[in-house]
Image 1 (spheres, rainbow, N blue to C red):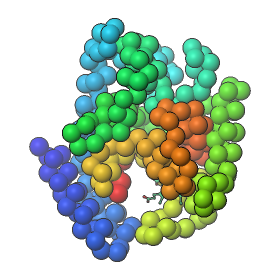
Image 2: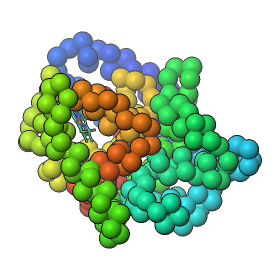
Image 3: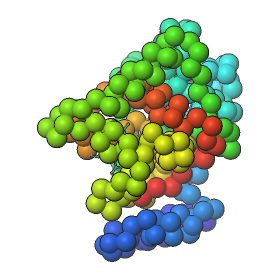
Amino acid sequence: MKCIGYFLAALAFGATSYATADSSDEIAKYRQLLADGNPAELWEMRGEELWKTKAGPKNATLEQCDLGKGPGVVKGAYAELPRYFKDVNKVMDLEQRLVHCRMTLQGLTLAQATAVPFGAAGKPSLIEPMVAYITAESRGIKMSVPLSHPEEKRAYEIGKKVFFYRGGSHDFACATCHATDKQRIRLQDLPNLLNKSDAQAAYATWPAYRVSQGEVRTMQHRLNDCFRQQRFPEPVYGSDLITAVTMFLAKSAEGGVYNGPALKR
Ligand code: HEC
């Protein structure tokens, strides 16, 4: 299969590029190499299949899940998330909403619906492919997150607070690494997430197939990794904290055209 060939090329290319020092150029090169064959496509296909396959005690599919545009509408839904959901009276991001639908429609427990959020070799995640499928259905659509409901405004304000909140052993905030133009850490460019074009380029490309991990990773996975770099404890999967931060980031990226799941280092 064409995708697999690309996939192996990416791994080989990825491995050599870590050994050498030069970073962004190498990354740009393999992005181009893989421009028409992102392995994330395999996750998208698998995700669509999972979405449409009956599962759980209720033996139901997820096709009636309301991602914000009404039950059954997947197209364009991600571009408007996180948002307020009346049925739960709170703001949810995609990953939280997916857990909610698996529980309500399929009858899974919270533990079952959040099991293996991040896959590993021999232990695949059901969540990552479904997130890849749903987000891919917003490709080419402008990010436009609502901020009209008081709960949406509240989530945004909490997310903003978290972004600037300094703490931990190094007294870091998100802003320490992500609020200055052209900042770098080791060999990696750090997006200034307060700058619209940087925020759009960063946010509107997650989830992403990570060459270094050989998996599609979700927004929460990315944020968990950053909380780790900040020396903060790992957030619970599907927590409101992640939704609030995501709301803040999504708003900063507003107007950017969604272009994920992308391919990343
Ligand atoms: C110690 C520095 C550091 C801190 C603190 C930090 N990050 Fe990051 N962040 C990084 C690094 C390194 C990357 C990876 C950049 C790359 O791979 O090019 C990254 C990547 C990201 C990305 C994806 C960028 C992209 O282009 O794909 C987002 C979004 C992000 N961080 C958000 C946050 C948020 C929100 C916080 C606070 C909860 C945070 N970061 C805290 C270092 C940090």
